[in-house]
Image 1 (cartoon, rainbow, N blue to C red):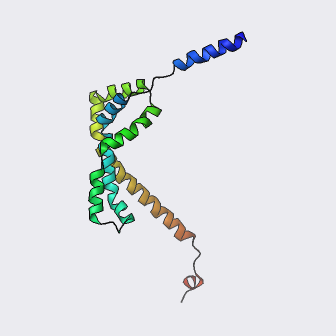
Image 2 (image 1 turned 180 degrees about the vertical axis):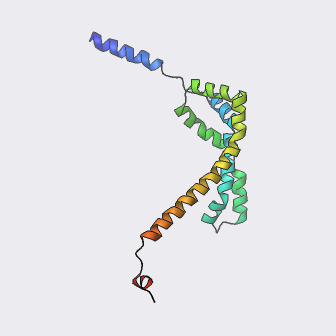
Image 3 (image 1 turned 30 degrees about the vertical axis):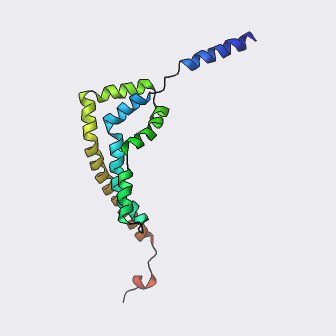
Length: 151
């Protein structure tokens, strides 16, 4: 009985030593620094032509209203709990401190260009793979008897 009580007491004490959840304010600060909401809206705007193709019967007025409804602050509020789930207050404070440094500011400023250039490289990479696989598929196709006999 005494061992059980000691174990339970240890367990309770250990639960209080877990990392503190990140505050809403600190996560918002991080998201503001990194432009998370604005980047999400930019991504949505880039995907909009594909979305429009999925609903071709929608009038242009629908899409204008859709764009007006896009609110980066609303999205940020929805994402904050995800950050809180994965990061402690200590983690968020450290990342915020990094983004306040010269290197952190440079990192944030460079991200859009890095993403843009990475997408170009990724597209070229995937196109190369598609061509390679298509060539292998062509080579593996059995040739028709007429194509292999001389005329």
